[in-house]
Length: 261
Image (cartoon, rainbow, N blue to C red; front, top):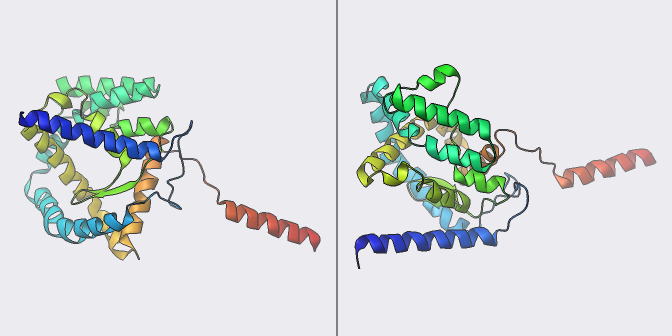
């Protein structure tokens, strides 16, 4: 039995497990808002918290943050921009399909234009001439597709040394990896792609990390921020306004009380 076969079996079992957990959380006909900042779904908190402490207090402090700082300081900015553009350009085909699955045809057309233009004139994505035409980068993930069709976030997860995620996002990432051209990229080039994106994302977090350090409970702060960001992405930046039913009941009671007076 080959290693590749065992790896495929293991990956398939992980996907089925994730899908099973996702189904248990339930689905609806519209995007869910149950995983809001007021009540995030976190049945694995007893496991997630130690993972978060390890990730933020050790893995990030001693490895991820220093590495990203060294990357920003010692790598030429133009080189960094070119590497990041090239890495993100490989995600454009998955965004095309994910937009089509949501019926967002104009967005899919823009992604197509970006990929074609940047892969040719932009020299395999090193440069981003598409932005000069107003075609800004807007990545669409399969996890967002699931959210649009009513699939909830599922249980919140913290992956050691990686950070916050959810069952729905993990399933979405699994599917996205099988889109062309990501599916045909060898292990080491793909590891470089993921590394470049990760370093840039960690560098971008530098301006917000003080908010995490100053928060009363960094675990809750990051978890709530994660679910708010997921909802923002599913609703394309226009999430519905949530009304606290307890506040509504209190206002109704006060109105009735004033009428009696």
